[in-house]
Length: 391
Image 1 (cartoon, one colour):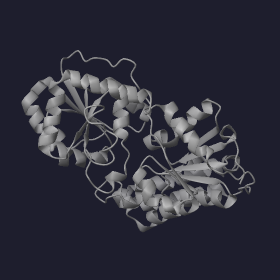
Image 2 (cartoon, one colour):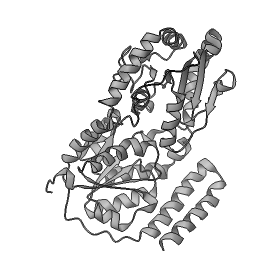
Image 3 (cartoon, one colour):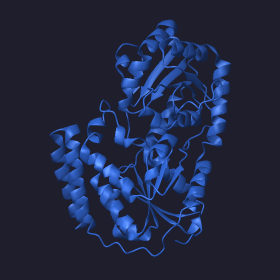
Image 4 (cartoon, helix red, strand yellow):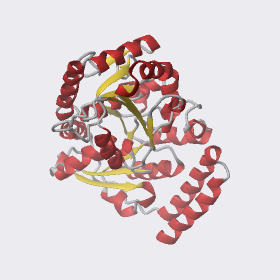
C-alpha cells in the first residue's frame, strides 16, 4: 500500500457517546490536526454514521467499541480495505464484576464483540503501555496515545476563605476506591483540621460522604461542563487513590493530567499507572495504599503552602508542554504518518439502517442484565426513532 502525506489523510472517529474517553483519546488530537491543516477529519456517533462517511474515510478509528454495531461496522471497513484503529483506554475484557459496568462486560456476547473488534482492526491505540503490551500481538501495529490536558490556568485563582480545598473527581464506580483506601484517612483529617479544610467529591458519592463534613456534586455527562465545574471548585489538593489490581494497572494516569491543568497538587497511589508518571515532590506525591501514609501526605500538603505552590506550578508547566493538546496531537500525527493506507478500497453499500436496528436491539438486550426491565422500553423507543429517521 502506498504512503501518502498525513495532511491528505481522511480520518473518521466513531463512538457511541461523546464522553471523556472520546474527547481525550482521539477527538482533541484530531480536531487540532484538522484545524492546522494536517489531516481531514470527521467524527460521528456510530448510530449516526452514513455510507458516505465510511466511503470517504481512509482511516476509521473506533473508541472503546464493545457492541454488535461496532463489530459490524468494523467488519465493513475491514472488508473494504480501510485502515481500522481500535482505541482502548481500559482493559474491557477484564472489567471487575463489582464495578457498575461489570455485569455488562462479563457477558460472553460482549467479550465476543470486543475480540472481533480486535480481529477486524489493524492498529491498537492506547494511552496504557500495559494494554499495548497485553494485546499488541493481535494487531499489525500499535502505538501509544497521549491524553492531553484540555484546560490549563494562566493564573490559578487563590481562595479567599482561608481554607485548604481538597477534592476527588471521578465516576460513580470510584466510590469503592475512596471508601477502601481513604475512609479512615478523611475521618482523621476532618477531626484534626475541622472547618479549616473543605472536602468535596465530584461525580461520586462514597459512603464516607455520609459521615464527614463534605460537599458532593453529581456526575455530568458533558466534559465541557465538568471542566467549568473544576475551574470553579479550584482545589488545592486532589486525591487520586487507585487499587493495586491488574485491571487498574491497565488504566492511564489521566488524573495526573487533569489535575495538572487545574494546577492541583495531587496525592497519587504508588501503583501503576501513577508510578513512573508522578515524580514525588515535583508534580505530586506518591503514596502507598495504607492509612498512615495517606494521613501523613495530606498533613504535609495542608501544612506546607510553599510545597503545594511549587508542585502546582510544576504541574501547570507540564500541562502547557508534555500534556498539552498540540504536543499530544503532533505525537498522534507522527504515528499516523507511519501507517500504510489503501487508496483503492472497495465501495461500502451496506444497509446501515437495518444494521443499526439489529445492533441497537442487541446492545439493549445485553444492557438488560445491568438495567433490568426498563431496558426494553428504552430500546423500543430508540429503535423506532432510528428507523423513522433513516428509512
